[in-house]
Image (cartoon, rainbow over all chains, first blue to last red; front, top):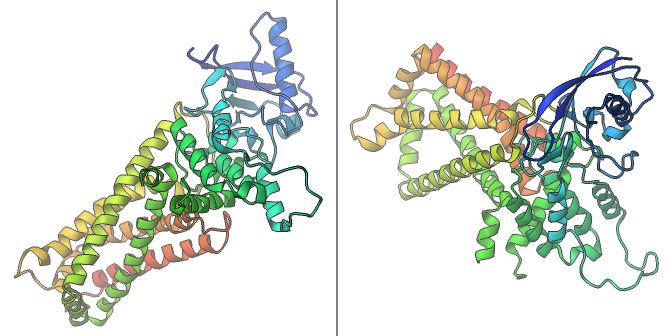
Length: 249
Length: 219
């Protein structure tokens, strides 16, 4: 099939950007979205033009590198799917597809469709870890953990840090990401002991970086390729109250 | 102490202030709507109710001080949140569609909020201040009947109550989510918010409509 791609092109972080149109010919419906971009890029290289820069790594939906706004929705808006797992069969011959990088003041565009998501790393550096000595690996089942807690921690730990939540949020808030990290560690016994310090540090860092405030639209949950629920945001809000009234320094 | 203050002024802290003051207003609206239903029993019932409220004396002052504090918190914190949210996006999207989470209530909070604020100012000027400021103000029932017999004012009241309902349809649920009490995106709190919005919207509008349509109601 043949498609028109309207892609955001920007030479560097401080360069002005603009949309440019490209014709993608002979696109197979079996191609993934990223393979289609590769295909267009090969054509651009053959013509001696600068290929479209986009971030990618595993191409199997677990690394969090890929992800742009496709036709106004994060990762194209397919339920629980990263962009690399979206196939061209979802599009029709003759479609025009608008491809735009995540827009957030905190995630500046580095080049074309690639943004700097390192602010997520900074939030993790602030508190997204366990620093108490938990000793050697214990026998299985030596520390009882309820199936509920296991499920919650596992659901939260699915976050791949792709940034779709921030990109889709009308307020550019990072609460789904932060709350997933807080939940993931808070519900497990090894992480629970540091909940007060962690919650305080991660919220402070999130605010310092300039993310927006959550207003509970739930756009993030709908956009998340790992279907992380905003019930984690409610849990992080509970951790906030615990941290607020804690005597821990 | 400094750390506590930092936390209260953090993004989540400000949201908690919005949630608590918002829920306070919901409580006020429930009492206000219940009180307004005295209109259906006629002018004497309404004026009697108003007189009983005023007779509470210092309690009224405490309640009013609380309301003013909640209003200041809700408005000022709300403005700082909106400003910050606008800054956080930076460049707008050329094309952005809803992912399916937003509701008409949630996407209009920034419009319905200021509308309600302006309404509250007008509403206080029409019904509350005449009694507070002058001794010989006409009875409340007279003020209400006069104001709502005008089709433009009656229409303004009804439209505003529908806007209030929109605000509550997101605000009530959102407050519990922010306080950490909501179990999920959907669920009973969401339904309760819509129900409450309907009760406020329909209840207050019905009374305005009745006063407008039944001229003898408040005689």
